[in-house]
Image (cartoon, rainbow, N blue to C red; front, side):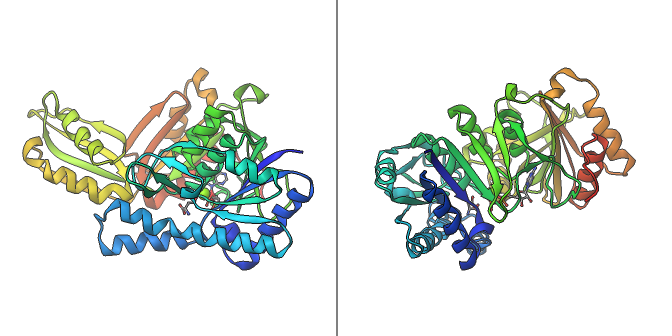
Length: 408
Ligand code: ADP
Ligand code: ASP
Ligand code: MG
């Protein structure tokens, strides 16, 4: 007997038939004698609609009210799945984040999980009841308000619950049958990885491979949660996220990711003096805008252009924040370009191999794709390009690093 957390994403609960399918899968694990807790996302598209409504009313909306709105999607699916389970004879009850509680900090819209007391859930599971838990939601105790964990946050809920109830496994069911060398929806020749190291998955997720949310991988790595990604539609083995030393053969590049979630911001003619970067990025941090890639060119006339990326969702707030600080910072103009994509190649083998970045630059230049910004880390190289070339770039790099599987 094992204790398992099963998480189902939006497409897996997109309509009543799919919710019945989820109930059948949960029932199978329960009948095999396992203790099961389930975490679900909102129905496919629901969260997007809720986000859009908030944005339409006001791009600079109150983040606390945004959370109240977007957390509702998951409330619908936990109730529906609990009913579906009861209908097939499985004892189940729904849990919202605050009822457990899943305690977070107060960073509304991207809250961090601080603690979860798993004892109540364990007690219910031991009594044979299946807790059906709303992903994505938490509660901030200081003000007693609902929080959400950032887009894709139900993965984090699942891993955090798995750690809190000391589960043997955290199974993430989704619309693909595992973790691939790149998004199989844009590269049909992407190959499924039986295993991937936590660190590589973390890096891939952080640069846009949304099959697992970044913080969920971070937490799984820290808490040693065994995470498996598998299809909710087919019975096939999935992909396991494991320690590096559990992987026998280590390619130099293990995967390629892309993200269209960032926007490029350029500050024109910023005074070139000490403290200016601290002023710009300090103001953005205070406004809770995450900054990613940064480049600065040294100008000849004591000014410089500073370019960086922020999440598209934070762009309006970033522009507003910088505009308010314009007098103090003394730059000439803010240029914003949301039509960009970040393409990244990731692999732990890069630590010991030279020339990885060069292969990337060559492959992109052969396709005539211009690189706007470059950033690197120990196991990753990322470039920012025009969004229209995203698919072309990912396919070209997948081939250039020898990752293509047999033609489908
Ligand atoms: P869910 O709603 O189940 O959470 P997501 O849409 O968040 O599902 O994540 C699954 C999607 O991630 C897949 O449909 C696929 O398009 C995308 N994806 C991106 N990169 C990868 C990758 N390397 N391997 C598998 N899927 C990937
Ligand atoms: N429903 C939330 C979202 O779409 C959380 C999740 O699905 O993981 O971002
Ligand atoms: Mg997801």
